[in-house]
Each structure stands twice: as structure tokens, then as C-alpha cells.
Amino acid sequence: MAEVTAALVKDLREKSGAGMMDCKKALQETAGDMDAAIDWLRTKGLSKAAKKSDRAAAEGLVAGKVSGDGKTGVVIELNAETDFVAKNDTFQQAARDIAAVALGVDGGVDAIAAAKTAKGEVVSDLITNLIATIGENMRLRRAARLSVSQGAVALYLHNAQGEGVGRMGVLVAMEGAGDTAKLAEVGRKIAMHVAATAPLSLSPADLDPAVVEKEREIQTEIAVESGKPREIAEKMVEGRIRKWQEEVVLLKQPFVMNPDQTIEQLVADTAKDLGSPVAVKGFVRFALGEGVEKKVDDFAAEVAQLSSQS
Image 1 (cartoon, rainbow, N blue to C red):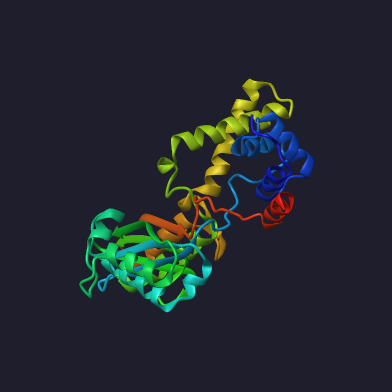
Image 2 (spheres, helix red, strand yellow; image 1 turned 90 degrees about the horizontal axis):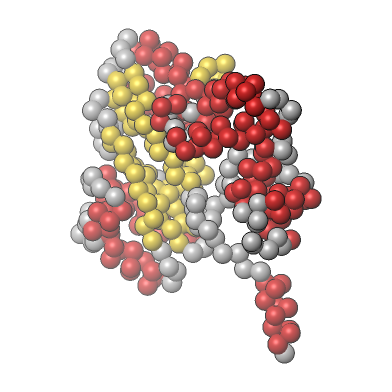
């Protein structure tokens, strides 16, 4: 069992928004398991947090690029140790160069790393030279590529740090015939929506079954905690699952620029305007550093330790 320290309680409080004593109780009940503690708080109605804090846990840049015909787009994440590097012109240009390479590579990070830039430099060598020049450890962490046979792929870079680079990148693939400029415009609006709402999937069918089952268990426990018999609670849960899907599935979400309209309705209206079928074929959202643990130096603790040794 992990020790329930003040730091652990503070971390849970920041992630859940729950009270300090409730966080301590949650950690005690779940043997110090952070994810389980968040779920425990939710079942008790003490937290609205469904996911971990979205604070960036790694530095660097997300770079994006769309092909000249507008039918293919890529985003890549190039990490470094400090946020100062993101402002470095050489680092920014390297991120742009790698995104340009990724446009022509139908493969993952390893394939991109082995490919050459327009200047003839292998991407892995480019990164190695950057490390030697700037003096920080770096890595090409991930990359994604979307294409359509007809239509447009839209790119949105949030919190831009320079041309073609930012702290978040979103691609949306709009498939359809007709006015590609209109499709690209709508796609960009949907990309901005994705940046703001972070949907889990495109449609209900695309949701991870394990995530759905976990949400079902949480909602069932909430209903039981309210005093309802389990058979009634289970019926209530189906409605709550549908409501949850409206919050996490892109096509079901209310459009941030017009909350009276869902993304699904926006796409249907676009199809009507163009006079031909339109569909969102996919989306990608890269937020810098998400899912990466970042070391936080406790300088006060270090000073105390040094003092005790002197």
C-alpha cells in the first residue's frame, strides 16, 4: 500500500477539485492508487473530474502541415527538456522540417526518423545534431497522418509558437465532393472544437469498450449510492451512458461555436449546402506532453536534505 502523503493528497485535490479531507479519505480507501481514488470520488459525488490534469508534462513543440492539394495532413510532437527550447528558431525549424518529411512517409515515428529532409539530412541525425547544438535531450515522440480521397484535411495549431508550430495540433479529415475550400473551412472550425473539448472518439461505435464499461460501473455505483435498488440503478445508467456519450463523442457534442447545433448537424448542414454527401472520416489531437510524467524538483526538500548532512 502506498503511503498517503500530503503531496499525494495535494496532487489528487488538483486533479479532482475535491476537498482535502475527501481526497485523503479516497486515497486511504484505494490504497494510494491515484486513478482509483479519482473514480472513488466520482462515485461519492465529490468530484466532477473524469480524467487526469491536462497540464503539459513534457516540453517542446507540436508541428503540423497540410499537403499542397489539401488532401493529406500530419502532426508530429518533438519533445525537449525545457519550454525555452520551444522559442528557439533552430528547434522550431527542425519541427517544421520533420512535419514536412512526415507528409511523405506512410508510417510511424521510426519510418519518419529514417527518412531524409528536403536538405538531404536523415531525421534521426537532425535530432542528434540538435541535441549537440542546444544541449538538451530531445526525441520525436509521436506522429499522425490523415488523408482523404476527395475533400480536405484541416489543420489547427493552438497556442502557436511560430509558423506551423504550437503547443497543440489538431487534424480533421473531411471527405466529400464539391467545394474543397468550404470543406476545409468547416474542418478547421471542427478542429478548433476538438482542441477545446478533447473528444474520446468520433462516434459511439468507436469508443473503447473498456472505457465504456468503466463509466458504466462508475455510474451504476453512483446510482446505488443514492439509495436506488440495483435493478433500478442499472436502468438509470443507460440514460446516463447516453448523456456521457454526448459529452465525449465528437459527432454528438454541441458545437462550441453554436451550442444549439451538434457536430453531426453541422456536417449534415454542410452536406446540404454543398449538395453532396459529407463525412468526418477522422480526427487527431496532439496536446504537448500529454501522458508523459514530468519530474518536479522539490528544491525545499533538497535544501533540507543538504542541511541535515552538513
